[in-house]
Length: 374
Image (cartoon, rainbow, N blue to C red; front, side, top):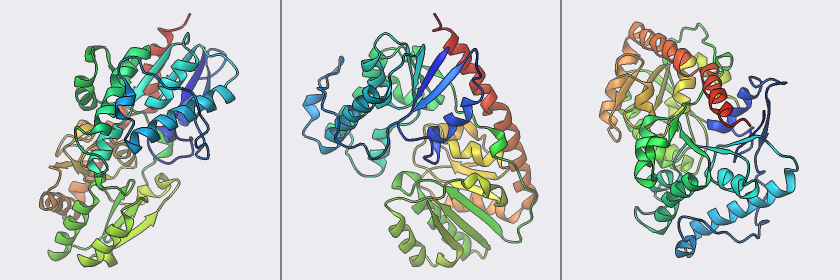
């Protein structure tokens, strides 16, 4: 079977699906499987000119929004790049971004297209304060789910919680499958180490949706109570200057290290002790599984896919979102008791290896792909 994995971001993009799919490629071995990757380079801008028409709604109702205009132009650019670069036919296309799925089905209407929805662009924009709930942009973006359902041959998502989120926006939520992300455990190996001072780490894009303001307030509370720690923030984004200023105002700048963009954080993540990310929303939260495979104790918020990965008190600790005090209390538990911290980390590692291995994901995908073989 000749497969095409249609990404949006290039495979070298850190984090999420773009960094996961390439590691699956070696599991689809010839002669039975031939798998290739496709994505659009960042330099492609305003190349596409094709008219855009959706089957389930009239997008022009929302076209006065600059965000909608940008989305449509990106769709046109993806179409242009697809037509330019793909000259052969595939037996099956698996798309990992709505724009990729819609474009592939338009260019190759007779080829089965499976669509995995990994996250919610509109929720990210809402939480980051870029759009208003119920506004033009929000209405447009949630309408895309029904268009995907109408045009692609099968829809998947990555967690039960995200399926519940999508359910009001599709006609047949019962037909949407769930295949959680899989991770190559060879990339995430625990390393035996002893840190005299607890090392906290978070890896994410620096945007409001990730709740790093809550993390900094929780760390200020830890310092007030006299608990030594170092907080490592790996990632970059538009609110980095704001977070750095906040760390100074809270008096924890000396305890906080801002790394910026880092290509392979998994290479040194095993040397930390505690992974913490108080996200306001997560469809799955791949970085928690990655941290668990590095044998770090996990502390996260009771939202979305995070709560599916962590059973509170078993594989890690869960706290409500928007609650710095609860987060500080949870962090205190794992900072002051290394034995408890290690026990949590070990349980989280066992679960991640059994439930989020790349072998399991590949097995489930192969079964699905074979249903569409001619």
